Image (cartoon, rainbow, N blue to C red):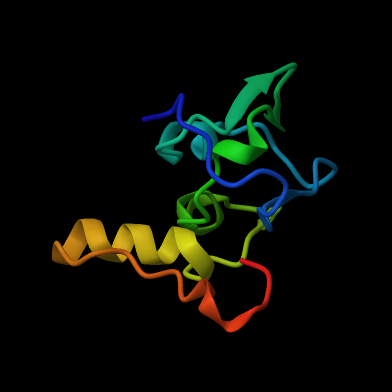
Length: 97
C-alpha cells in the first residue's frame, strides 16, 4: 500500500525539522512510508502518499509534525475500510476536494 499515491498536493502534513530529534517513530508507524530517517533527522520523502491518519503526530515525542487528521477523502476511505461501507468524500457540493 505504501506505493499508492493519495491526491496530489492536498495533504496537510508538515514537519518542523528544527524540532526533530531523529527518533524514527514517524517512519516506524507510518503505514504509507511517507518518512525516512537520514542524518539523524526525519524527512518527508513521499508527501502525496500521506492519508492524514495522524499516526506520526500521535507518536512524535517533540511535536515536530502536524497534520489535520480525520478530514477529507482520506478519512472517508479509512472509515469505509473499518465499516465496509462505500467511501463518500462528499465532493458534490461544488467545492474543492
